[in-house]
Length: 471
Image (cartoon, rainbow, N blue to C red; front, side):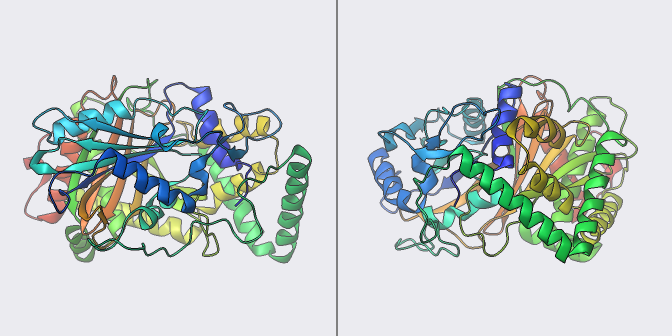
């Protein structure tokens, strides 16, 4: 596990510096039933438990070497002076009655605030006051520290698979590989040597695998052409945003998505994207906007970690770009078109294009990375909305003996992207987390209702779109 931030990790820091409205924190609200003896765990119990877990989460006791990105050397992770778990684990209470409305309002306000870069970049909040005696944990982590897949892997460390607790089942240990120190500092000369080694590796790989190099070059060229010549349609979703957030969720059953995919053709991911397309269509129609005929382009992150990546920290993701057919009035046709598009993307290895871009930027000084990666990879010309889809644990997880019932995922917003959709499947439930700019997305409930209507139209064939609102 290297101590120097990668080009992509640093980019998430740079995005915040370029635009104050872009808060690059990922997170989740995890909702639990009451603990076995009733009520909720106490704050001292939560802090003690998290402190015990930090031995398997080495990055969580480290801070950035600089609060801002540098021109010629990337920030490093270094031990935090006088680390205190109380600086990161807090307690909050919802006003009565503690239902969805109160929880979502609290979530929007909580994710309106950046993390303190002088400290390790994470927080955990114990939320009391939920109806029916439930309680929740709110996790906020900066995107430079971990990606969505890595944060999901953390559940294997922080929770158990039985009410009795015991050691978690961890498929990929959160430990520093043998022979490496989590406190090792890499000096500029060593960074230069590392860059040279990476360049040499890239050259050797290209020589030994010319077909792979050609495919990756073509994918990168396609990405550049898409951004420069075939820009994404611009709508009211792509406007300047502030830091204040609005949040809500849509719930669905994983079994319904599997049945829809089996009956109409498509994967669970295709069905989820089709539901998002329905919601975005309803939103734009309600706003009286012209629907983009070529589709509304979504950036869909793709995990590209290989089996040997044991750290789960940092970011190793690529992206594919799917033009959601929001101008098509029939949900079944939208699903078919999305399935055709994602199948073509998979066959073309389109996800290698952003990976190639990241590989190239690893060889460039940070000042070049800022211009090339931060502004290009998250440009509104490249995509209009981010949609993440992360498969979570299939079985019930527990904390303090209480079963976790729901996970509400939160995806960050880049500059001029007013809404982001994060989809998380857990224990038979699929949850769409809608994170939005509070000022420009006052009608977030329209998007949520549109997603629900789109799911229902696919689930019940007799329901036609001309009977639904917002069409």
